[in-house]
Length: 84
Ligand SMILES: [Zn+2]
Image (cartoon, rainbow, N blue to C red; front, side, top):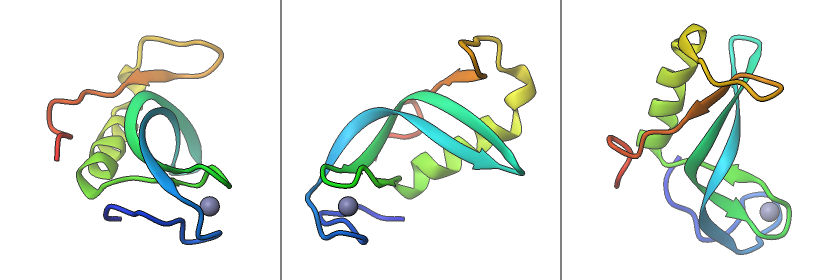
């Protein structure tokens, strides 16, 4: 997905934020902190830039190495490869 200025669902304004992303991968839900995402201010729909999404997939693929847990596996998003 690419940069959005309007929400696809409700046409609300979308802003760039670092969020705790909920990411679904092979039937599991993984939470990743500090993910740069576009979030709709009206309906909270989340959009990710392509490199960010790719990185999330990578984190999800290595989810067994996630050390930090809250009440669910929590990974730290690395900004390194995600900068546009
Ligand atoms: Zn929306």
